[in-house]
Length: 298
Image (cartoon, rainbow, N blue to C red; front, side, top):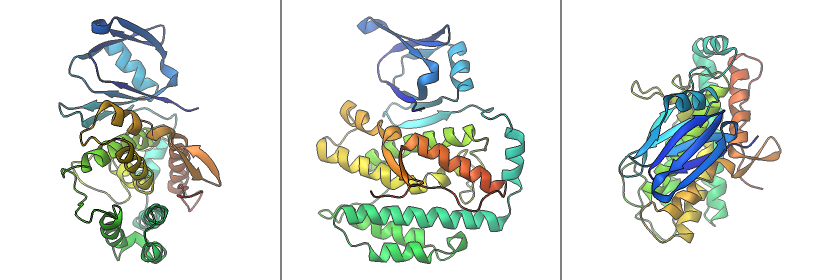
């Protein structure tokens, strides 16, 4: 089932009644009722939004990802359910005891797919990608030769053929803010899928920053980034503003329902991520060797 992504950018009072989300917006005299089972992600982007504790509890029990934005309208916080799967303890244990060899193999698969998908997006934009495709094939266990970094350098230097001055930086100038917004949403829906599959988003297969609570989400979202990049590029084409406006947010918030090709069929990203995280769980259980990732292209 495709879940809805809700965005709240105006003052609102959010509460719970009979298992439904009740949305009250006093300033514009609007009241809506939304079934919580239909919701996947909620983005809170106003300092005058109030949630009741009973609603918050019910949302988390239904594995809704709650994203909080700062005064600059950039996502900075994420809340997830801590009890998202019936055999979570067993799956945590499999994840914790995974061997370094297994994690390096999983990271190799992840980077191979990420570079391939980046290469196909470049090709779609009329940019040579033969070196990227070769780096994808040459990626070894654990990406020991760091092909990810080489591919990233080429990718970002060429993603805008008419502007060689762009530098991909987390706190850089436009359009870095667009990419950051899309990646924050991608990270949230990835973490949500990991929790639903009974995995701990903190324990990564490669990322291991002691201050990062979502290392595994940052790992698993890598092959999905080019799909977010395409959405950003489309937003830039249709919207001339350099700030994240309501129109741009509307476009970027459609990310969870964008179709991707996975396992020989088309599925929305939020459904594809469920397939990816379920396959990762089976890898940790030693029931399979390959993670199922989306492949860019028709």
